[in-house]
Length: 117
Image 1: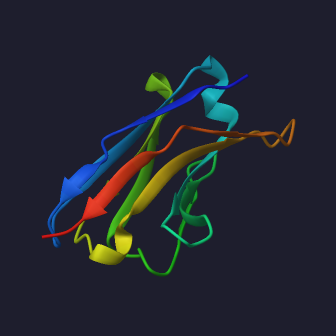
Image 2: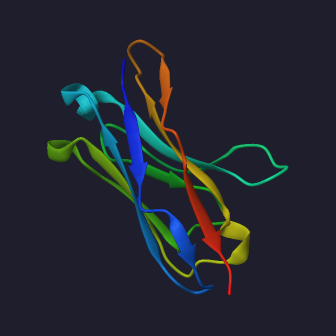
Image 3: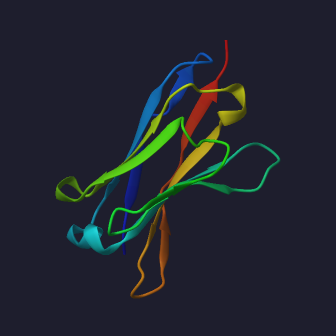
């Protein structure tokens, strides 16, 4: 069982920046594909950014050029650097770990990001 703990959310003004972190419990973290999802009130959960075990990344069109996902396998941690934040980025952000071997997905508890004046 993989446990994921997110941190770094909060309230920020439009145009500001935040960095989210997600710490995983297992030392085999390096074999997992990792992702950040978000869910705004009344909307479905959507993929924001993902990074494979090999370091390949992909992003939702709405965040390309503003968000950067990265991972530190030595620390079992994945990050989401969010710049030029907009009110539309307001949501609960969830960390996801996917094992390509077992097919299982694991989720963190979520962290709130609010972009407002």
